[in-house]
Length: 291
Image (cartoon, rainbow, N blue to C red):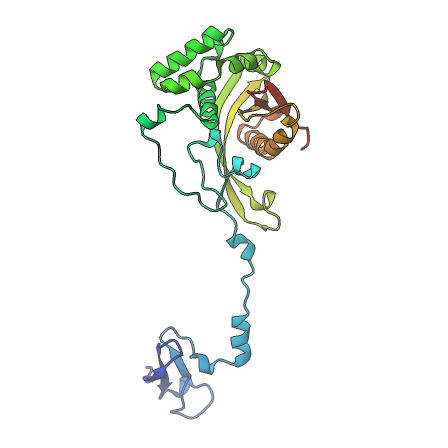
């Protein structure tokens, strides 16, 4: 039977009460009956600050968390953020939160105000992406067919009236007459707006991140399967010229490289070709092998 008794004798530096146990020699270890088993512990079992040696207090004050890098890592990362942007036209559903500072909320304009002004360049780009996402690829051999697809998609509610007019049907026709466009038409299988989420080692994107992992999310505009291999396409509506095309494309390479890695892991197939296609310029830029 434990005869030990406790008497509250004070409060520590944080205001919590602490007690002294007396009366049980077994709790003393060395000493006479009646000696305190311990001198002062708060309600959580910790001694008051005045009973802690100065060297230990100094060590606690100077403690540095050994995994500080992990504290600043995002839990999620989107492929488009690898270009240094918080969002992109094809990420219009906000797949993940941005790594950097939050942008102020943007409210949708009322319909009567939106219809009173022309579409912005970004809105026209979204319209072209939507048309590419939903149109019937078998009806892309003539401008009238693509315009007919825009009208059909408007009737089905995939595009509104202004988007159906603003989608660049002529640029889409030019794409399908290109080598890449013909490759899509000849594919064994097509995936459009392919969304993915993968856990990846954080040090792929942040040096010295250690063993942490990040949820990587993205949307691949188009992936074609032919003879067991993949062709990955990322559509861009940026304004580029012959002088700026290469530099703009290089900025998108990290994003495209993530698409390649993700699709190979998910589908278990090799990507034989990955390219950016710029509708405005009618030009494609392929991801260099091994980059």
